[in-house]
Image (cartoon, rainbow, N blue to C red; front, side):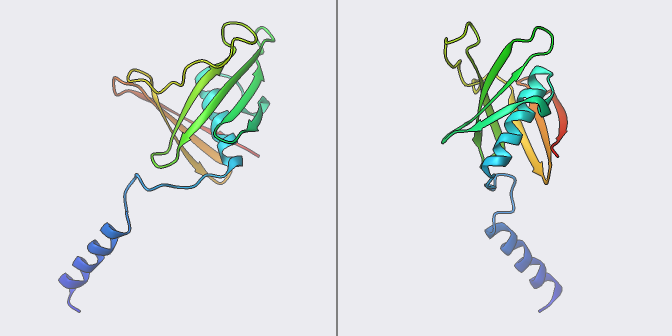
Amino acid sequence: MNGLALTLLSILILAQTGCSRNKAVYITPIQQEMICKATVASLMGTDHLNMDSLWLSSYVQVSYIRKSDRTNWTNDCKFDQKNGIVVWRGVDIDYPGSGPGRWRDGDYDSKIYYKVNDDKVEITEKYYDGSFKNKEFEFK
């Protein structure tokens, strides 16, 4: 097989195997808990290692005590595994028992992308104006 034919065959194989960023990657429930903790820590400026988590059937719930005023905070996360996106909402924001807030997936809400590599989670928050911030969290 000549060089041109081999190159064309390689391109065809890569195209058919879905060599794109939108390829779905399964994340385990434990990885979902890690991603949710990292997301909330990035958004709220708190320590991801001091959070409790609970994996529910369709989302993860994390809670933590804020150091500044010793109040308890709870957030939920759900996942778009095809695009590597996590969506969050606050729970009982107004007062205890007020229930969950809205999922932050509106047009003007930031998009939060995740990458998991062993015991590290990278969170990238992209804002509607095109700016972004990255943060990496280590879990041991």
